[in-house]
Length: 160
Image (cartoon, rainbow, N blue to C red):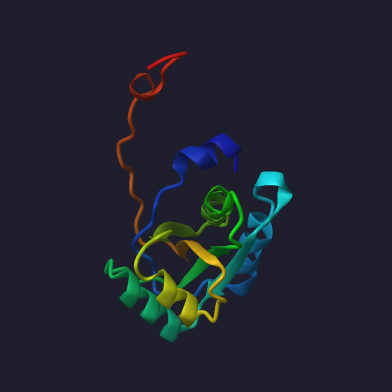
């Protein structure tokens, strides 16, 4: 897929088909995501792929957004100076790679939420790591086309 087209057509998918995501596709997502830019090449992330139904049900319960999904990737980071920026970069790579592979995704869990320690415990993640995001992955059961602002509404040259 052409890069600009990929960037312009990726959407948050909140409804998924009742179909498992193949392990090789999930590995391809993580393989690609590890190339995300990071401050000083620290690469502080730890990516946990979750496909077990009981863990997914727990995550759905913790996040409490009425989401149902076949797989997700939790992005954790070492506690470094730019953990939020680095974790956001790798999260974006996950979202874009999923689209490239014909999958849908949605960034549903986030940094600083009250459930982050529960998620860490569920996934046996040492407390020293920070949860940056939880990204659902699956085969889309919807094709949303939300309105986007026009260029002249968002671009400012030199000053606001």
